[in-house]
Length: 192
Image 1 (cartoon, rainbow, N blue to C red):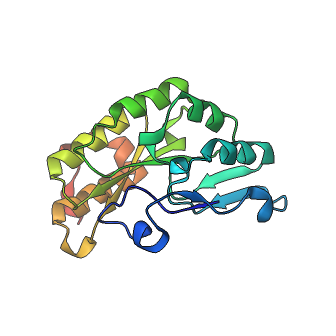
Image 2: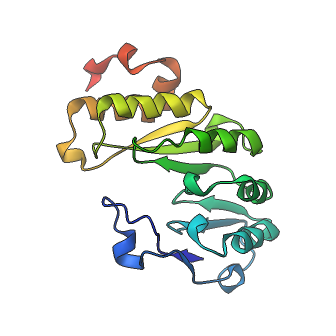
């Protein structure tokens, strides 16, 4: 329904491919014919000026909505959360790519007003091996976990990632291990 993203993140190709504005390119009725699930590939739907109308269309459809690219937590406010609460969503994703950005207030705002409350339905992509230290990666992981979100490690250029980062990914992304072992320091790193 939208294309483009104003963020111009240096690790992302969306701006180069689709432009540095999020703009509406379709209404739901142009491609939806009653399917029970709608999978959106929009890179930054919430940056689109017509986001409220788009979210309203998704709500009215009654279909399950899969925001495959995640939503920009920086653009979340009470009105957006209110609209998201009207949409059937199995799992919602956000991202915390830059540890220099303090996104905790936005995650807390979502917690306060969202009907999506269980961690298994709220994911946060954590970018590692790109302008972050191991300590900063852990800080973001622990912070979102403590706010009842489910972190998911994304490694930028896995071939150059330190072993410790690959171990961190294995610990976090294996749900059984992550929920059983409280901290990375307690995790048995010898497995890889």
